[in-house]
Length: 469
Image (tube, rainbow, N blue to C red; front, side, top):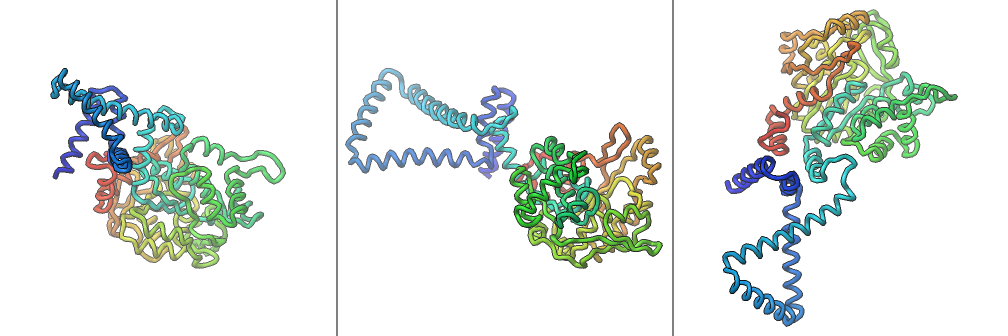
């Protein structure tokens, strides 16, 4: 009861300080915020000074301390005889506290000059944000392509405990060329995820997405793909290369390939054709009835399995259904680990159908395809966008034989999934439709906070005044 009262009183003092005191005093209050571990070390420091003085007194036989105390006592008697004790006492105590605060402030100021970020953000605000992020829920996101990097860009503002498990079945473009020439696993999707999780995201994304337009052997390659390929060659494999790159780029979270096997996708189409190669499946333009990979049943990366077992929250998608999301589930150990976890699990359905993959698909068709690929029910809910794109966007996509994914509520409900419907779309001036990373992350975290486990986790992190509201 008393602890709760003190926390409530502290929150009230903080709110009042924002309204009535200067900015600097408000920043001082922040240093006393729960979770920074400042108060305990400050008190320990004070106790250390007292114990050190006591030890010195004992060691020196108390003689020097005796004369010092006698001198102080004489000075105090003069003061109290001149000024009443009920005035002099508080004045001296306040003076001592001011000196203590001044000394600590100058100490922190010296540290701040070295560690202060390049922007105008205060060091205490950076520390508070750091503590909040690294105490956030452990989120595992499974997929690939631009959809996964979009989601990561939004989630990193809520938690730094993010693990992106990415497919390594890509065999087109720069990734495909590097795969054939160097025998490395395709770095394209991993590159996008690393850039999305980096603090300096805008600059790093531009750097990693930069494609050489000339040069013998360089033309068409992106800098990010070459960087990851070089890291893989230096460290020995893609897993260690990505880990080393993550340290260099100071990303929030980690990016892991689903497997280190040289996986090649194949698909059987409704017209009887068998297409081999991830990049060729979409171009074939048929209806996929079965998806598999060579070698069959590739082993999962142990770190990916551990991340799933430790997860508080698992998200699948968004991304191309047959070439980004399902390929991860073709690794049996990953599907088994997801099925075995008792944490909130949600699938983020695409906004538009994809020609050559999900043409004519409804939300229920997406769910059925995932269930069929892994032979079980893996997620509890599905997130769908509820607002129709503009007429300009609809015309643009109709020319490409793409349409909004229709929500067949009854079929989805019959599959045992909860429907989470929200406006999570962004549309640019040309009518290009994408998930909005901020809205998408906010909706996903709000749904998670409504689950029993999520409610307990986020209450500890944000308190009663949830940052998601």
